Image (cartoon, rainbow, N blue to C red; front, side, top):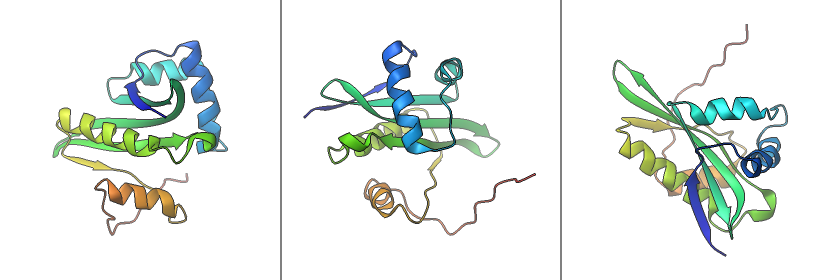
Length: 142
């Protein structure tokens, strides 16, 4: 089986259908809105990548790059591979492509977050060079 990674430049019917199947596997509360997906893909700050396994979109990952006074920062989000396609290296290929894109764009630091219970994902993140930081993550609840 062949894995290929591509940047999504337009939300076609194929892309909308594929992401519509992937996003609920990522988040039970997220909804799929094609117009919103088009805005995301068109955003200068966000790069969305798709993993194809034998030609079919089976995974995605997003890179958000934002400027701060201390330099360009990046965040990896929405990494998901379809449950039927796991174990073929799609997530690793997506992460390596996101890392390469962040380096091309001059990102000073690249971060992601993961729940402690996702041990397989954490092992993958560490295997491609991410290291755990001793920090707290806070979410505004107002």
